[in-house]
Image (cartoon, rainbow, N blue to C red; front, top):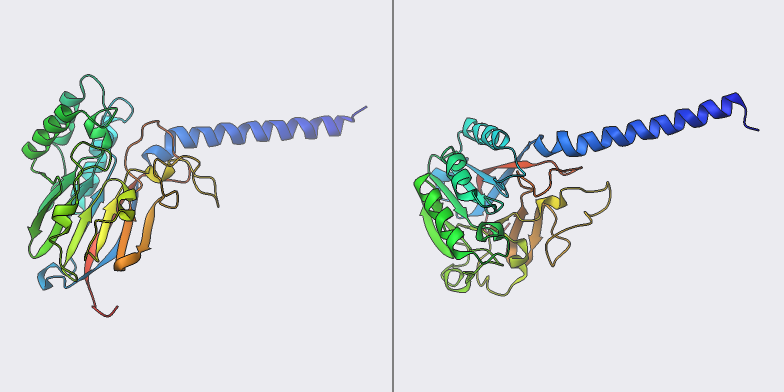
Length: 286
């Protein structure tokens, strides 16, 4: 027969495990999904125009305005970005999660979109084309909303920002993905940054002479990641693409932002992210 001490020790163990489980669950569902991290990094760019040295480029991704993400939370993130006074703001897709009145909701939220002093640029992600990545009408409506809010939406197009070329690819799973023509215009060593929602595009054969940075999202960093292991769920073919920086062939660098929003309000060991890049000149022999 178990002694009183053994019974008490067993009961205490069950209580501690239960408390740990409750605490972890509360943290996962209510704390970390809204605990935004600012990640500050240098972005070395070949032949960066001198007047852009030290300028800041902020990347947001996967905001997922909709029924699952709290509007006030998104607006607070926008306020936080605005307080950084960035020179360039980029948003790498999945602005919304589709529901019947998503266009009205998106119009209300994105009228408060933070602006870059030099440019505000975005690309559409798979969710911006509806649940099955094929709703062209939704994509057009969102494009109009973002234009009205002061953001340039790029669909396999390039713009010049004080001598820096910024290229935006349409979504890999969307109806207009056609990167080859615009990428064929890039010369080796030209100061260029590419926005591409899905990081799997980095492994495709259209990059040509491009040898700069690729900014992506889509993965949410897996949202829940056991310590020392990869996340169990990643919506990419290349399962090594989780979050952060990757050195690629052709002297390219891929950066995957963990996103702001979620499809399910749960994050563990994968905080939502605002990435703040400081532009620097990269020596050609580096």
